[in-house]
Length: 64
Image (cartoon, rainbow, N blue to C red; front, side, top):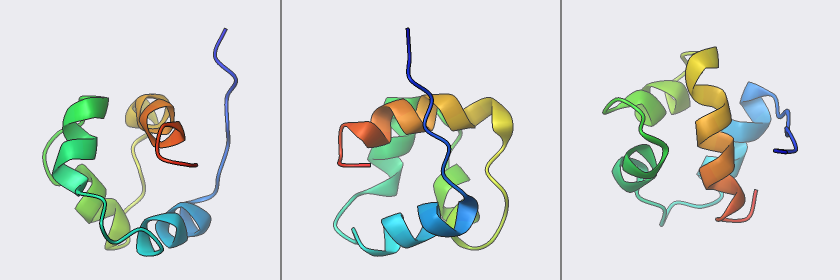
């Protein structure tokens, strides 16, 4: 069973801002997200709900 972490958009954007060495394209590949999804999110768009869970699973590996 996957424990669901819910983090708001601003906190998640801050998390990315505090980890500038992470490569967004590699995270997108690991989470099977379309290209530029994370950059668009960081730039202010909402993360599509359909991608949220797969992203969180990957980000947990990197300290979320």
